Length: 437
Ligand code: AMP
Image (cartoon, rainbow, N blue to C red; front, side):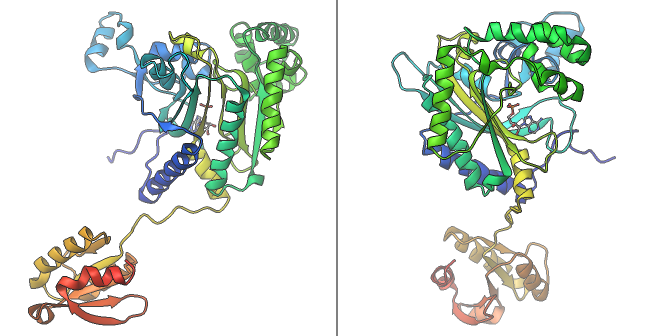
């Protein structure tokens, strides 16, 4: 039986793989103008990093992490041995924890230094129930900015993300930008208590998961997709009524800067996002329709305590990640098509078999001159080679025949104008370059 890709994973076939490359290039181009530079961290990290960084009570850590284990360590486990912390590894479910770990490990933000502005792109892994727009391996592009808590960082990053979507061709009207503040260590505990007290009063209306979360992580109930919970939580206390003066001021500045930049947003006091590490600003970009419950195409926020959680000195941070697959689905919905991955400018055809070596040499010379060149590798007839050249949408075909070749000549055919000319075989690359290839 044929073996298929694992459930919840996708092959990016050539047209889409090319689109993904363009997606990353556009991100690097847009984010680069804001000072972001690339970082590439491992796909596996110590499980402890995610437990401490993202939070044990989050769904991502408690239910959705893939463990990575060597055969030798699996044998130890089966023998009842406990693994050392450094052998307990997980596939990264998101990019922030690893990036912050790298910043701390390599001291990328020494005292007094300007903020580190980092960007990444690559696969993330979550053992979620697969459906359209929700996969077990998916790609994210993200940024992290460490070392500054000024609201200009938050606003700048949100503006930058909206610029990226625009550059990719996403119509502004197809997206909603939701913003909220989650407060800080000073004001959030009292708010969390207020939500917990409210939930205790409405326990009967909540699902089992939310009742369980009530003690550890009551704010997660705002994210619950069960209709009864959404209804019950609609009248719960709002964080915006509980923010301390500093958080209110910070939030107000972020909103004012977004307004100033002409970026439209909606305030959503129930936006809490799935990960534990957020403080103050959180935001999410959703597509207005088409993706059902998987409508979030990107989001992020401020995490001023995360560096300490993973063992670093206090370093404020802000970051976001956007999901490639969901953005791609939304772009398709908006009529953006994948480019055609096949790129052949020139086809070198052989009239007879005895000129194949010369064709091989000429193709090489043309490629060395920078022309995307293909030739027949299957012993096709000349007619069938022309058909193939057409299919590959080659703009020119060079035909090598024994008679012309004996005089050092080759026939160059322009496939759109059908004009033909005989040129010296050594001149072919220059003639084609002159013709615009
Ligand atoms: P998060 O790290 O949960 O904030 O996710 C950031 C973005 O990644 C989301 O807005 C989605 O676009 C995307 N994303 C998260 N989980 C998945 C998944 N399982 N499959 C596909 N995309 C995802």
